[in-house]
Amino acid sequence: MIRTFSRLTVGKILKWLLGMIILVVMIYPVWWVICIVFAKPGVSVSINPYLYPTSLTAGFQKIIHIFQTTNIAKAYLNSLAYVFFQVLGVMLISSMAAFEFALHEFPGKKILFMVALVSLMVPGIVVLIPQYLLMSKLHWLNTTQGLVAPGLASAFGLFVMTQFMENLPRELFDAAQIDGCNHFKLYWHIALPLSKNGLITLAILQFIRTWGSFIWPLVVAQKQTAYTMSQIVNMYNNVQQYATVDTIMAVNFLALVPSFLFYFFLQQYIVEGIARTGLK
Image 1 (cartoon, rainbow, N blue to C red):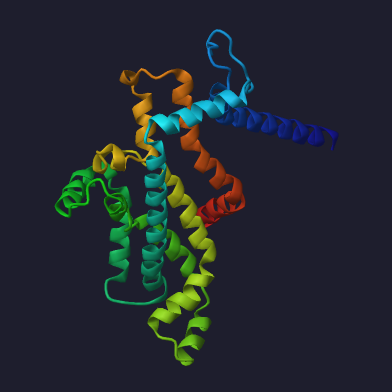
Image 2 (image 1 turned 90 degrees about the vertical axis):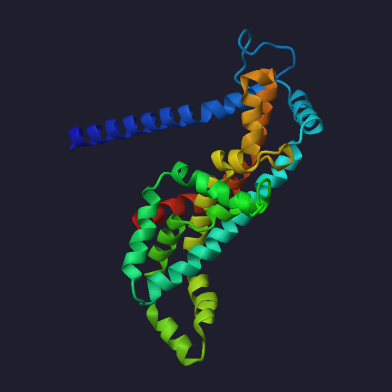
């Protein structure tokens, strides 16, 4: 018994140490960005590095200077609009499609669902040019709708929502039909509220994907007035920009702030959502 207890204790300690090492590796780059942004001006980071912020005032002055000298405020608005309409559209379209696939029978249902899943295996770069040409013909280049439209039909969103709706009790829908609910009311008043956890999961995953999107905004938003935050970050990270390290890190920090806030307020749903997705 003592040997078994010792083995279990050693195993738990090793797991704890491994977890701490992984945590440090993941958090240290973000903490290093914060330390550089909120550091005293004129101090070389490579010669005299600090592992803690040394001047909050200097950091906020750098951030204010960036807002005053660049169009980063416009990029913030563009990114927020992009994320908002993308997440809302994917949730709406995916849930409507999943309602049909999960709860109704129609000819070719299995084939269509398999085709949708197969599209997940198609690299995004393959459809990049056709999507660009379509947005160009619609005159949607450098617009919010040009950013949002190609990503609204999400095969991954369809898959996630279908898995959730397949487990909804059919008796509720039968009772609602007897009470006179039409097809849309069944979706809007019963299926959608009961799929709240699935919608939250999809919204979280879609936010993470959309906020960090770079290739599509780079292609479709070529004017600086249509830039997203990912493009602003790329612009400052360009070797030809000749920006100082603290300025580059300040821009990266500003790009990280929405993700920090998103995780802070929704961390419980993020963990539960990803766990549910894995279990399904």
